[in-house]
Amino acid sequence: MINKNNITGVILSGGRSSRMQGQDKGLILLNDKPLISYVADALEAKVGRLLISANRNIEAYQQYGEVIKDELADFQGPLAGISKALNETTSPYLLIAPCDSPFISKALIDGLIESMCENEVDICVADDGVFIHPTFSLIKTTLKDNLLAFLNSGERKLGLWIEQNNFKKVDFAGQSKFFINLNNPEDFNKI
Image (cartoon, rainbow, N blue to C red):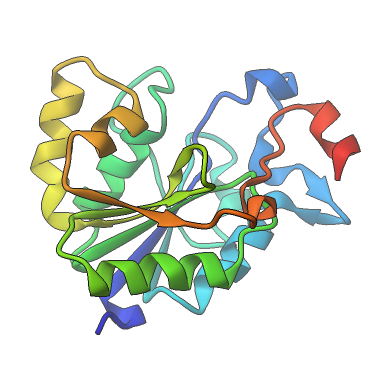
């Protein structure tokens, strides 16, 4: 049984937001609420500690969780934030979510946790029936050194790292709304 005290959550908010003309995606408003607030609300009840991986607007993000900054320079992607989170936590599991997916559901989080409980794996990753969604994952924190070695080899692709480990796809086919992420201004017109 995995309870919330066994899980640290990290919301990935450390990107450049180049497709949003440099606006910090997590702080862009949807229905008068910052995108990150939807994700923080979904994670809060499921984790014992909530980290926000951010490289700017630190003060604004602090109201949603404990802010951590990448140790790697130049916005090197989600793995840099995940690596930092793994170094900051003492819990056995790290729950990963992106800041720009306001329709994340507690059902998705529960599904990842249940799959981890039922399978002998190190990573449970959400799958929509066609693709995995690496930024929706639950990982064992024992992978800290494994991830560091991957980063030190020059790799930066989260999906590739997941696939190189003992992982399980968790089926969320038919629930594609969970994975809607707002990457550019046009995406806001589609919801």
